[in-house]
Figure 1: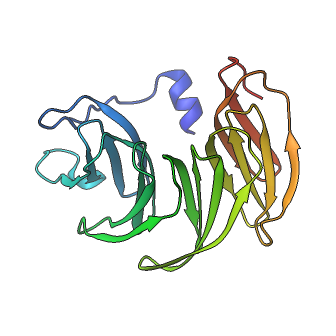
Figure 2 (figure 1 turned 30 degrees about the vertical axis):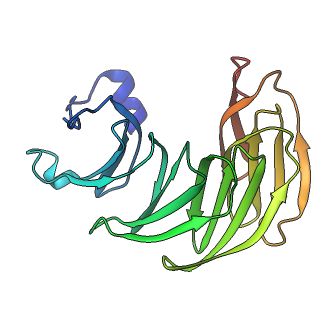
Length: 212
């Protein structure tokens, strides 16, 4: 398994050169079985397949006009959102074409997830937006969820629940189907920076230096 190989040192380290002109480093990345997508601090997004990791002439560079990319989520297309502007864009991962621009939040969009025709975004404006995705070009706002008292830093969801975490030190749980509020989870002493939700387990990391 990956964990046992890592613990026993059975791995080969390969470095991917992903710097470009005026690059200030890599801010975020995601990957699947076929590709790696990285967001760079030089305002660009880079896409590469595992087949073409070496040499480097297979990179596709997607420009982004504001300060930097802060999160990626992708399947056959991918989304990205910006920490200065308050909208999200949908890009075709193969061509680099912008397919859609989603405008709703009035402050910076901090995180998003999308899967199976549903997308959830969260923002510094303290709100969560739930979107229905009929296609990359047909995305409509279903509901806005409010209740957090500070920026909503991260969201995750499955078919049953949407889970959000905020700088207000709380995690909130919402129904995916109805978008109604379910409950609040307390415990952290400072703002929550990251969260993942799988099955019956929610794991959160906070500026209080704890993971719950």
